[in-house]
Image 1 (cartoon, rainbow, N blue to C red):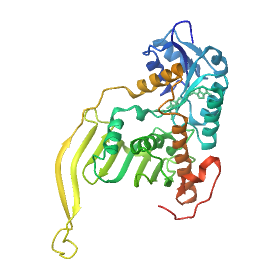
Image 2 (cartoon, protein in one colour):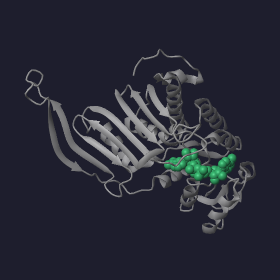
Image 3 (tube, protein in one colour):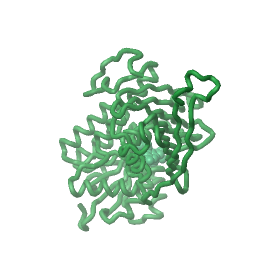
Image 4 (cartoon, rainbow, N blue to C red):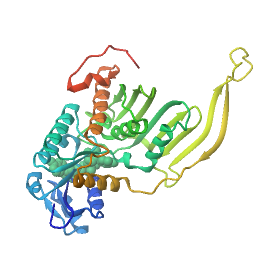
Length: 356
Ligand SMILES: NC(=O)c1ccc[n+]([C@@H]2O[C@H](COP(=O)([O-])OP(=O)(O)OC[C@H]3O[C@@H](n4cnc5c(N)ncnc54)[C@H](O)[C@@H]3O)[C@@H](O)[C@H]2O)c1
């Protein structure tokens, strides 16, 4: 800790997302000093115009002796080496999504943090979003009736990354939302992905996640190659249906009191429609106004100070990486992949065609 009561926090990687962390950290009472680490000096220079008191470094080893905590917002392939370096130095770590690019790397990070007694947290920002809290509350309280299916779409033209494909870039958000809302982890994944505009990296992906408890399927569509920007989660139940549209400026959640049921006598009488439809009110529940990233960073620093366990801990990050890894394998091998193939880091081949 610095001489003041607060922490000395470094943001490693000051691009699009890291610069948002820099802004947020400057608004938190628990922060005494903010430092930035980026090999590109232009990044630090741009930020220092708004925050002239910040320390700036081009490598993490130079910065670590002067830090209590770091937020790693660099490309995913660098997460493991940077996090391990910080952990080794006894510094608390928040790693942006995805926690790592393989489950073996994620486990290595968890083990290292536990051995050193430092906080390891993952930046699953949507778990700090009041709309996602609302979705979870509705599902957990069974307000939608029997859960039929969940569907997410995260589409846009770009932004193409050069470090990972669209699955590892965008799907972590949806997998973390689904796991959080359902209070469960999927048991198996089926994935189709394809490369179009980029030669090496898949730019379109469809995932089908099977959960056992609750017994439900979730479909995830991610794309860097779509004409429309979409950020949507839909949950369909027997009583109600709910949509979270993250692009809406107001009424981000709409609960549709709509339903459909089979007519008891429809099978025999072909002159009658087979289903009956119910159209009720559309309600937009009140949502707390908060900035998820601010809540996330505040929580990370509270954990670093108090030793409290973070809500989005290393295990939570690992759970998402396991799904991504299974999805990648499923796309490559054209078969559903069970998550327990990755249990304990070992690979257990599953029977083709089982489950999904
Ligand atoms: N939680 C969210 O909602 C959210 C949103 C966007 C991005 N992200 C995540 O944030 C991370 C960064 O994404 P971005 O869009 O800001 O990328 P970016 O390309 O805009 O920025 C990455 C920065 O990291 C720097 N960098 C690269 N290697 C480094 C190293 N070894 N040490 C220090 N700095 C290094 C680069 O110079 C660059 O400035 C990714 O993991 C991404 O998935 C999270």
